[in-house]
Picture (cartoon, rainbow over the protein chains, first blue to last red):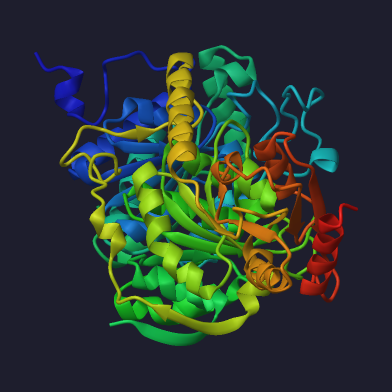
Length: 253
Length: 356
């Protein structure tokens, strides 16, 4: 009988339970990253730089060298590593708080620098680990522990559209927003994550994938309701799309 | 073959690190440390290295951490307020046991301070600006020549103890231009095998991971205990200082960096008059050279600490002396002449000699 380990190989670890909450989209995204690394055969030369927050747990479940960078600085750390190990693959895995609040500075300059690194931002529109506070990507009207009457754009500002901010940057080779709210979307997200790694291997430039994900705990919703909320409400603000794909000029996978 | 060059001391730092095998310098412009990156941007590519100009000191220090993860020794250089921004990552590197070489061309503070050179970051350098129980080895050369001589030692310390090593040089000394004689280039970093801990992919080792925030309580305790044992070992074995005419001194002048350099003239001048003044110049600020004060002779009746700040190292001298002798302070900072002159130091030492 074929086991999960047969399918995912050595990259995804099955020896312990994950600490992601039940139904969390991080579980899917982490699996997609593992599948990519496994199928590309790059596990032995891959370095994971994870952020602070729920996304920081991701490396616990991957059999690759890894470090937890300090708040928001994962892209800078990844650049330092890439300078030292240009032939290796380095990717960051961060949440929306780590990437777009405290780490916006680093991610924007990393994108503009154009160095071939891969950055994954899992956007669940809330600070998950710290207990459900408003994030830069919390959508208008969304209730959080720090926007108790719902996000009011006149008070709190608008949700931050990170890939849209990167769009004009020449250093960006692959830029996409995906989601894991349904099977069809997961398949598209898998392809974008694969492309983001391929871009690095081919040395084309910076690659960024934002993945819209439900946070049942932060949203105070059941798992099905959290997925339905993300599919309807969150995606109404964050439209999945491929903004840029330099692989099309070479050999897209 | 040795080579003597006429350089700014910031450039002497850059030339030293290149000659000693460092091949990557991450930096962000700030006066007066900027000269280091100007120099390395020109010179490092000639030996296969590079200067990487980042977008902020936050990015600089974290890129340096990422570089160190690969088992390679990188460097950075900054000045007062820039070092403040780097503190989080310096604490991260200390906790993660990641080595690097840093220069703080110390400026006057607090806040953003001013571009005037000073010794205002003694506390920050020796106590740590980040949270938690960590230390950074701090070397305080007093001239370009000593920067060149300490560089191989600094590299050895960084790679032996797997820790950041910080050179603190006041901004005045950094901007001085003088002759420095350099040894023949030698890659001191190559003397150390980093393969047992470096994050170089799992091709030749099982997965390695550096945790900063999600270790278990047991892992956290073990990490802190390992740090504590390491810092005790460094404190015991790595104290460095220079002393002049201590054996029969009545007054001891204690200073580091440029004021420490001035002590030689000060002591010579007093001794020429038959007056018993000696000096101690700490070279390591952390670990502080307590051993230099453990055996000061009974003839010493007072100690004068001279600094280019409002009194920071004087605390460490008082701790080392532990009440055995009165410790006095002379300091000046800010303004066009940000330091005590030899006349100031002579006047204060004379008053102490006379028992005032």
